[in-house]
Image (cartoon, rainbow, N blue to C red; front, side, top):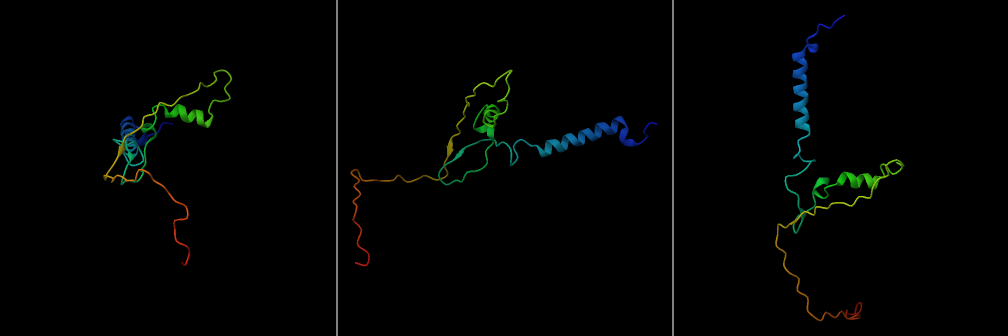
Length: 119
């Protein structure tokens, strides 16, 4: 017996797939909060560390994690090759200018230079 409901028509299938595609695009927006940012920087003076995507630090992060987790380590047919990470070091972003620390040239820290207790 064939189904006569509207949800089994070709137009309804196309409409449902379009809705699913829009929801998927909305939920997996690439530049949303838990995903990849437009620009990535290390925190400098006056900033706290935020979230960074894995691909902002290393170009082959999947291969590095595969090696760290030991995936494929027991494959005797095609043993895994050693992977060297291709690092991408982001620049540091400073919000405030830090004053330089001035230290006298011959810095001599004397031992017993503090006064005695209750003296």
